[in-house]
Amino acid sequence: RDLHSLRRRQRQMCIRDRTPIVMTRISAIGIALLCILCVTSCGLKSRQTTTESSSETGYSPVTTDTAATIVPLYAKGYTVKYLPHHVRLVDIHDPQKESSSTFHYALVPKGIKPVGIPSDYTVIETPVEHVMCMTSLQLSNFIRLDACDYVVGITSTRHLFNKEMNERLKSGETVKIGIEGNFDNEVIMSMNPDVIFISPFKRGGYDAMREIGIPLVPHLGYKEMTPLGQAEWIKFIGMFIGQEVEANEKFAAIEKRYNELKELAANVKKRPMVFSGEIRGGNWYAVGGKSFLAELFRDAGADYFLKDDPRSGGVTLDFETVYSQAESADYWRIVNSYDGTFTYDALKSLDPRYADFRAFREKGVVYCNMREKPFYESMPMQPEIVLEDLIHAFHPDLLPDYKPVSYTHLR
Image 1 (tube, rainbow, N blue to C red):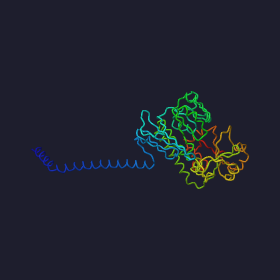
Image 2: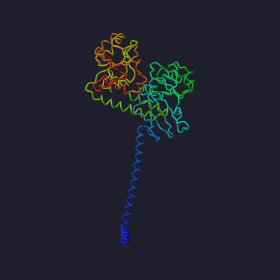
Image 3: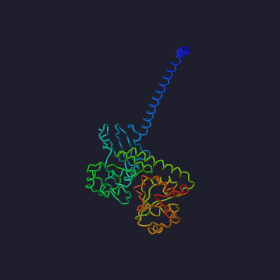
Image 4: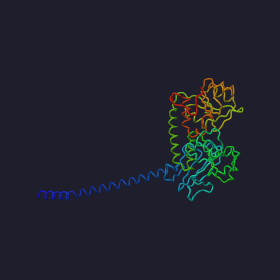
C-alpha cells in the first residue's frame, strides 16, 4: 500500500510539473539555435574581414591552407596573387627601383590545368625537382630550408663551406656550370634543371641559356634594402619547391629573434659611428645610407658614416672623401678574404693610410674573414646572427656572454 501511494504521488508530481519541463526544453533549444546563428554570423563576418584586409594589400588568398600562404611583409622585390586551385601569380621587380623591368610567373601545381592566367606570365609547374643557383645568396635559401638536394648546379665553389653541397659536388649530383658571361650550356642541359635562378641586373650571359628553353627566374634578394627583406626570399624559394609551410616557419623564427635584438639595442645611450669597406684599385667601395648594411648598423645601435646618403646601392668614393667623414669613427667593419691571420699590422700593410683612422688606432675593427667563415652562404639567411654579432661588438654590455659567429672584434 505504501509503495502504491508513493508511485501515485510521483505520477501526480510529474503531471503537475510537465509544463515547466517542456518550457525548459524549448528554452534550451532556442538558446542553442541562437548560439548557432551567432557563431555563423561571426564566422561570415570574420571571413569578410579577411577578404577586405587582403584586398587592401593587393593579395587574394583563395587557398584554405593559411600555413602555406606566402605573404611578403618586408621583401619589396616580389608579390604574390592567388588564383583558384593554388595557382600563384608571382611578379618580380627591382626593390631599389633602379630598373623598371618586371618579370611575371605563374606557379601551377602539377596536374592542374591553369585557367585565367594572363598571357604574359611564364607557367612553371610546381613543385620543381631540380634547380640551378647563380649566387651564394640563392644557395643560402636552400641551405636554410635543408633543401640542398634540389640544387643540381652552381656557378662557383669559392668559399663554399656547406658539407652537404661539397659532398654533392664530389658525387656529381651537383655540378659547376661556369660563371656569369661564360656558362657551359652542355653541362646545364645534362643536368636537366626545371628552373635556373638568375641575377638579371648583373653581368648576365643569359641569352644563350634562354635558347635551351629552361625557365630563368630572377632572384633579387641581393637588392633588398633591409635584412629581413633579404631573408624573406626564403618564402619565394619555398613556393617553387613546395615548402611554403617550412619557409614561413623558418622566416617567422628569424623575424622574431631579429626584432627582439633590434629592440634590445633601440634605446642605447651612445650610438657609435661605423664605416665599412676598403680601398681597391684606387677606389673605396661603400654603400649608401638607404642600403641593407646601413639598416643593419642602425638596428645594431650604431650610426653609419653615410647615414644621410639617399642611395640604396653601391657608392664609389676616393680615400680623401672617406677619411674626411670617417676619420673619427668608432668602428670599422671589414669583410675580406685574407690568406693567413688578419691583424692590424696586416691591415696597415695593405695601405699605410689606414693607420690614420681612429678605429685603427683604438682597435675598433670588426672583421670577418671569408676564408674561415661561410659568410655569403649563411649571412643572408641568418640576419639575426649577424645582428647579434654587431650588437656584441658595438655594445658588449648588452650581450656579455655572447660568442660571435661571423664578425669578431679584431684585437
